[in-house]
Image (cartoon, rainbow, N blue to C red):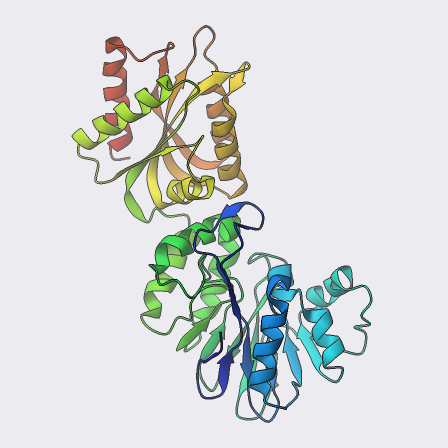
Length: 389
């Protein structure tokens, strides 16, 4: 894929529609794009490389865009291998090019490319430092822990382009046209979600810039209605609910806990819940379950007791929420157990390790199968989860 962003800024990235799991854990049914760009001026700057899976295509795109010229700079915004895998090959192919990155990124480079001597090849830049290419000027913006410590963004002043590294990225190859928010949300909470404070810091810096175009390292180039995308990032990174609704997430061994979860979902709808989403943690995409937990302000979890603890799919889900900094939500709990119910206690303990989680009473205990006598407690739990705080 080779196309113009502007007259002087060219896209040289590649789609990957064969990869099944991003970062070896996230299902990507529509693949992923590895984005890279070239700025053509008196001095030529290449904005990041791409994943080794598309090395040949990237170099072919680069050479066609250069049209016989040689690059002066490689700007490295992020050292993760899906963006930095070809730094070594680039350094060998263009020995006179200078690599521009943060000091932390330069420190990391020998860890990935031990045969390359970077000592005389690099420039370490800091917050607000600039690099003039001719008509284009690059302004470097430090973004540590969005989502690695060495990350920086680059603002091109003349054309008002923000090269945003992993910020504003999404799952999905560019050849697939689809709604941005759905896969950007799943990408954000599972990749960047832990670092909301750092994203908020970055958004404050971005608010001082006049941005016409956002060029992320994954997903489409954003050129219209930028306030919409930035607004969603502000909501996500401040851990505020995006949508009024309730997620019902269940982990059921033989199907009886599932019956209780589906019943309370029906009760919630009957009681006027604006939106109810239900997910089977044993079968549904875990990344999407995490996404929905952050999307809605309220959640009911239902799980079976297992080996004097918690059924593993639920334990895995709550672990994912904890490491992604889940917070500021109302939660209801349903447990199931045939002789010594303990799932509820474990879930309470795990939520207790998260910030600003309100556990709503009553916790409902199902003994093996849901019975008529359990319905009043389910009704009460539904009423309490929907109640205003």
